[in-house]
Amino acid sequence: MPAARSAVRPAAPAAKPAETQACLDKRERILAVAEDLFYRNGFAGTTMDMICAELGVSKPFVYYYFQDKHEIVETLAWRATVACLTTMKFPADDARPAHLKLAEGLQRWVAACVKYFRSSALAFRVTASLRPEFRAELRKLADDFYADLGALMEEGRREGKLAFEDTTVTAMAMGGAVGFMYTWYRPEGRLPPDELVARLTATLFQMIGLRPSSKPRAAALKQDHPRRTTK
Image (cartoon, rainbow, N blue to C red; front, side, top):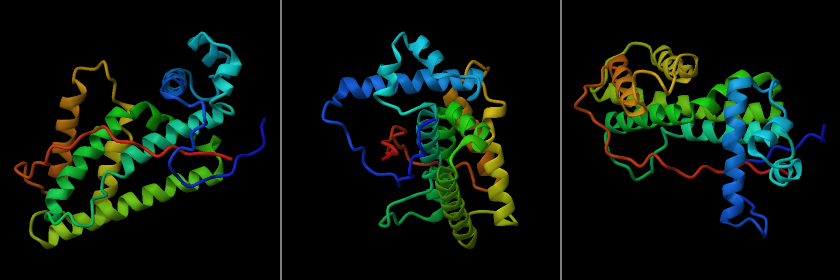
């Protein structure tokens, strides 16, 4: 097994000179195939040989982009975690009331968790296999998320727009409903993704006494996620 990699805080990708759009597309193709195999077979049950076979390529093709399957799984887990747990961040000059920002943030959170549910499931399932430094990075994102969520909840309650009792208990209950979606959500199920997002978001609104009229403004769901780099 290669030597342990040093953890590096998220930053703009340090692209290789030859990393054209075609190279980036190939990298994404590897991630997509690996994500599906990890989800179906588990981390331990998926080998680099299986990933190469599914892609129809030789090992050097994959190793050009990723050091090993641990780096692949960390890339997938990091992207999903950033997408899901930065949804309560708003610009400093956003002067909207807390309950409106919270409504938007909750909708973005649910939408991101639906979009990245396979990688989110992977992050939970392989926690013990992740490097301690990487787990610490994920924990920091989670702590920041719940701090932001709790602050918006309490501000909205002070403004008389929300109704709930214990901030921590309510926030963690919402986190359980959304964060463990991978245990029951199936894309081929009876609800299409958009409808699931709408219904689950409405459920979160009810948990904090947020009136349905507090609809979030339209927001693009596509976002760039900082790629973790290694040295």
